[in-house]
Every structure is written in structure tokens, then in C-alpha cells.
Image (cartoon, rainbow, N blue to C red; front, side, top):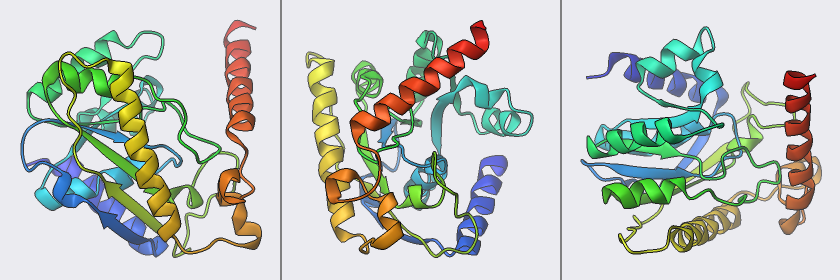
Length: 250
């Protein structure tokens, strides 16, 4: 029993109901009923943690997400993150986080990972880090390719949030588990994971209600939308990092 985590999920569901969020969740059967698994999730919204945690609840399971260390220092979010046993990641050196994640996987937990490492402004998949695959390979657990589409219309970078009653559809898909053999090249396995998630994401986009007019800002440029191209998004990300470095070194 996890009263804190259960209460947080209950509060999240209340918020989703107040927002009128319309969920389409596919692949719940791909979440193992017991044992460890790495849940690899694409990242376009500040609420992706909450969305990705919904499919495992069918089997009464919780996800321990890997999240940047600064969240754990927040006065309100920090105690909640620690109480739900999420895993802090120091981006200057992730060895400790990797060890904690491997320990959790070996203990039979589901560990949530965002392989892109940061939110995608283009709403396309960014390049993947190999950490999700490496953790799965080290522990022999499956990787669950998980994609979310629509959550970025609620709250994302650079665009106004719509956290009130907006009745936004959010599609969540958990794909078939991927297994990484001990001898498989991690980069090749990461490419295999990314390809599976790309296929899922494109299927979600094709099934999503059409977006027209001003709502095209939520569509990738590839689909005729007004979102930044991956190249433009990369430049904005680089600009953010330069500002952060200047703030700490200036």
C-alpha cells in the first residue's frame, strides 16, 4: 500500500476530470503484472509523468520516474517526489541515478525514463540517450515503448497552458515489450526503441482529431503544423542552455 502515491494519483484524476481530458489508452495489457520494466516515454508536456503513470494502474502498479534533481529540491514537489520513491538525476553525472534505477528494477519496480532527456519543442522525437536500454540490458527486464500525444496541448514550453476546462483528447499507448540481449549493441537497441516509438506516435497522430487554424501550432511541421522544426527547436534548446550557463557563471 502506498497512501501518498495513491493520493497523488487520485488528485491527478480529479484534475483531469475538471479539465475534461478525454483519454484513449491502448496497450495496458503490455504492462507486466509483476516484475521490473523500463517505461520509455516521449516528452512533450509538463504533465507526461502523470499521463504515463495511468496505464500501469490497471494492474495496481506504480512507476518510479527518473527526474532532474532540481525538482527534488523544490519545497512542495521535493517531499512528494521522495515520498513516491522517484529517482533524482544529476545531469552533470548520472552514475548514482543509474545505480538507483538498476536497484529498483531488480527489486521488481517499473522505472519511468524520458530517453530524450528534455521536452521536445518540435513535438517530434528528439535523439535518444541510451540509458533506458542500458538499464534494461543490465537487469534483463523489458523496455515498454510508451508514447503520449495531445498532452502538449494542455501544458508545454513556449505556448499558453490550457489547464482549465478544455476537453482536450490525450492518447497514451504502451507498445509491445522490447527485450535487449546481453550482447546487443546499446546504440542499435536504442535505435530499435526509437523506431518503435516513432511508429506508435505516427499512429496516434493519424487517429487524433484534426487540428486546423490556430490549433496547427500544436502540430509538427512535418504534418503541416506551425511548431518549430527539429532544427529550430534544437537552436532554442541550445539558447536556453547558454542562458543557464551564463546565469551560473556570470
